[in-house]
Image 1: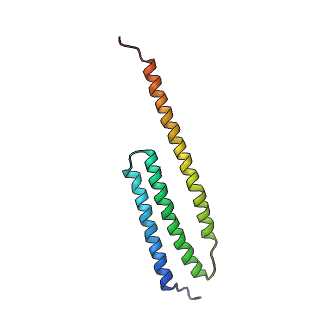
Image 2: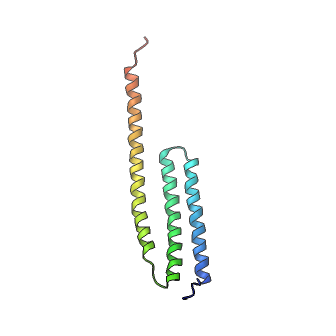
Image 3: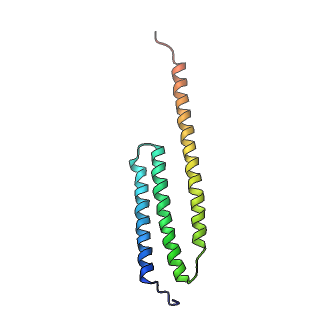
Length: 119
């Protein structure tokens, strides 16, 4: 396969992985628009985009490995980096959302206690 031709089965599988990854990412991104609050939005986008990215990276591993006639390790490193950083980022965003919700609740209760009683 030194002429750079990718077999039909690999081309078909890579295309299906790319299409499914794109659809999963689109569905996850639509969750940003449709879901009601931060926590639901984070859940939708994290699941959809992580699965979509996994499909795209699998397609990349498949096609690059067949084209190079050896296992291509760079895509595996990208996959490991994304799998390790995406959940950590999500956890930090969730914690900041919880902290902000708690601070807003504290401000509301402090505002009601300082207001003069009209009676």
